[in-house]
Length: 82
Image 1 (cartoon, rainbow, N blue to C red):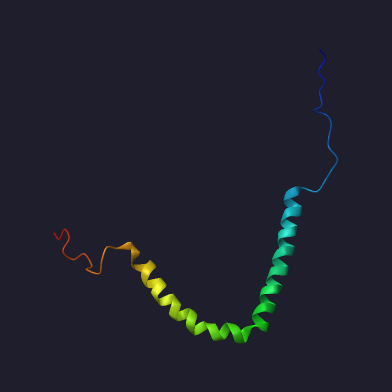
Image 2 (image 1 turned 90 degrees about the horizontal axis):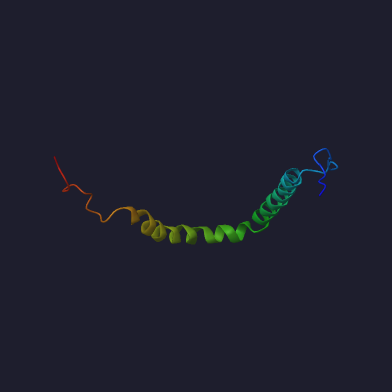
């Protein structure tokens, strides 16, 4: 059986997939930034109307998630005092 050595063959130059992928992400990011800016400018009155309600809704959510790291409100003063 005869084997061939193809190590000397070179593939034609083509754009690297990493380069084209990076470029497409930059284009997508530009369009997304423009869309977010236009949405914010055109719907400013609607967003500002919801802002007080969002702040009020954040209070109980922060209380639930921020107090999850300890057992209670005792502070732990009676534990292992030396």
